[in-house]
Image (cartoon, rainbow, N blue to C red):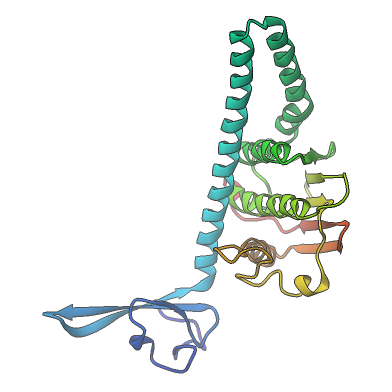
Amino acid sequence: RRLPQGYDTVIAEDGGSLLEQAGETLTTSHPNILSTCIPLTKNDTRTGSTLILRDKSETMREAEQLNGTRHIISALRANSHEFMNKLHVISGLLQMNKAEEALSYIGDVSALQSQTIDPILQRIHNPNVAALLLGKVNNAREMDIQLTLLNNSYLPQHSRFLSTADLITVVGNLLENAMEAINVQHHGSLRSVVLQITEDEGCLVLMVTDTGSGITPQVMAHMYETGFSTKSSDGRGGGMSLIQDIVTRCDASIEVDSEPGSGTTFTLIFSTPREDRRK
């Protein structure tokens, strides 16, 4: 495939030849192009090379899909864990011949269903996003965090503005970051995350508010950079970069209101309809 105008000459970022970096994925002299060189050999003698140039935006889209899959798997795991815990409690009570206590516990579980789970299913009609939120509710409960979906939330089965993969990437990362921010906040009794997902004909609004540690100006200046993280460096730090890439690609807006030590609110507004509403 022919490179776009202005990309006719591509060299390694350090000025060397791309053909000298065998088997590695490297940034190049053009920030949007990644390079991989595969040597060709015959009888232990190098006879040539295959040079692969990839558009970085394509790689980012693939990363979004993988990231969304990770969030869904995490949600399903949380749902399974929560369900098994409830079964173990009921089984234990029955083995102890405490039938009345078992019935009372089942009633409590049913009440919890109507208070937390049913509103999600009633307001979020996209099944994958609903599954993600159910899993995050269970995750939050295990961390002693109250995760609340605002009453004015509504999401159709097929969003007019974001694909399901993008929705899962954005919502999953924002909720995960919010809960992690609360967990590093050692003082105060309020452990709360509030989520709003509201879509109408004009726009899609995503808002996440937490009572966590907040974001310092120093972190705010770098949090959208690929690989940047205030946590450990074991593959972390891509979440906010992915969100920023989606916001940019969809011509959307993102606002951050944060006070260190008190909490953070992210507000994203998508008002440009996408072409394919079937995904």
